[in-house]
Image 1 (cartoon, rainbow, N blue to C red):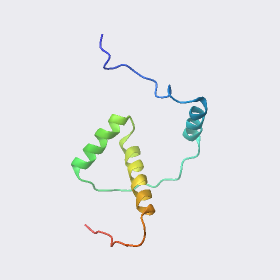
Image 2 (cartoon, helix red, strand yellow; image 1 turned 180 degrees about the vertical axis):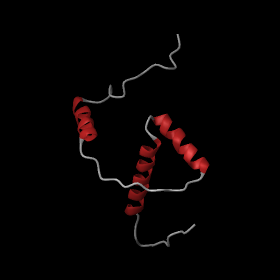
Image 3 (cartoon, rainbow, N blue to C red; image 1 turned 180 degrees about the horizontal axis):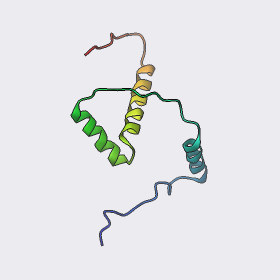
Length: 88
């Protein structure tokens, strides 16, 4: 018997409070979004889709998460050395 496809409940390790918070977030009002068109290299999109499949989320959801994390990291940087925007 193969165990490669064994399903594990992702919520097993959560406390009741953590689960309740997770459910609240799922059903809370989502921020307003806007559609954008973005050109990315084919290999980058393929890598993103592979990672999204690996973690079990739609690739656009993963892309938003990656962008959010990167922008938050940029915002935390010290403004002592401003950098010019790269145009390319």
